[in-house]
Length: 474
Image (cartoon, rainbow, N blue to C red; front, side, top):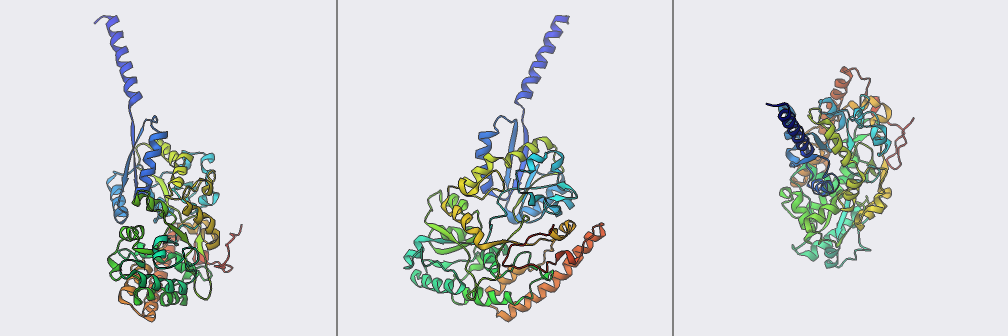
């Protein structure tokens, strides 16, 4: 082979390699349970990241199967590059060894795009490293417990959607009976999607918050679980139990899932639906944008007055993580930056799927949905900043609140199905308290065994007032 031929062949090989490299792509796998995120993600990503050389493989897994599938993925080594979670907190994710330290790849300017409270030690910062960022939502705006109402159903029942929205439990039960009498089985006042405890929580979380009963159900004044509080018996006897005893919710609610319940609301078969801040986007997608005759109001309060507010704290919104097992950390970080971009977050708000945690975005100005705008406006009236153990001691963030079953929502669901007496309900909660206290002590001991200085004192805020914003001591 002549020298000239060899040079020619090497040149061809080099040019071919460059061409292949220029058009090669890296696939970044993202896991979530949110179909809504998927639809917004695909639209904006195709518009803004089409020339990035990074392809997205998006998997939306059923929420009921998510934890199991994610655990199996890490055991097998076939993990997503980026994953989402709204229940298991960053401290536990980091403890499992599943998280990449984001601050090793991203500078201060990136994290300044979020409120600083997200990056308290024990929130999204674990052992000095930031391991998560908020995926969506603004913790300063109440995320759950909103009461949506179908305007057309109220009118059919002879009610004024402007004047007859119930503000107290007694008013709600009175209005509900009137709706059911008018509906004659064709439509109802409300439904309880009772197939899962999470669905029951969606229904009653806002109601219990009006009493100062706040997840994770710790009485912050005592640093103990509040299941012994007479307020639980009060809300069960005065609001929850009448819903089933008086036939306000249709029988068979235990087999009703959230999709069916939401469909009933859209189709005008129920007047009220209790849900989160993301519901306007869900209703829009489910109805193809045709369902607009609805609005939102705060959850009704006890007849003798409000005793608490919906809790605001930076641990409440869902988070994005980059897997510690990713084979493409640089590309995954680029996709994470996209998920935290103004372009993606603005579209999320515009579509009504949620609000944005970014300090660079004014949610009220961007949202196109009047119901979402109303939520933003009303939020200060129904919510207050609540304590978290990290305010007392950053290391307390390493303590995982135990999962006890049946949990309080499962007990509520079972008691409503059986129409158990308030005394029987209170008795079951006392049993839950005993199990929960023991389990929390065990979790604290586990953290202490790892060398962290934590105790039950970290869970006590003697000056906490459920009717006021809690101001952390510096």
